[in-house]
Image (spheres, rainbow, N blue to C red):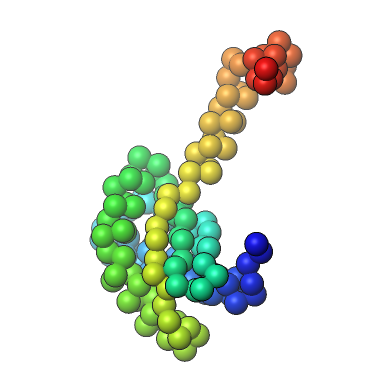
Length: 131
């Protein structure tokens, strides 16, 4: 089922404001050299839950940061509610997830650059075919 216009609008408002809140909190917390980006926000049909996908660089700090973000979820939700009080009646509950798509793309790139390159070695393609 495709997202409604309302879902898309709420997701874009939340995404924009979440970036400001999370990056501001990271810089105030003394975390230098850490980049947090909100790669996607999906809002449920009833507008009660927003699933937030975060890309964190460097990847090593991702698990630690997501744990801290989840524990501070009520504070983040309150800050977002203050910022969006003229745009949203109710603030959806926030669920945070790590978006590992960049890591996945990097692994594919590394394998293409490595010894096992299926483009240059056609024999490797046989391994990947389903039986």
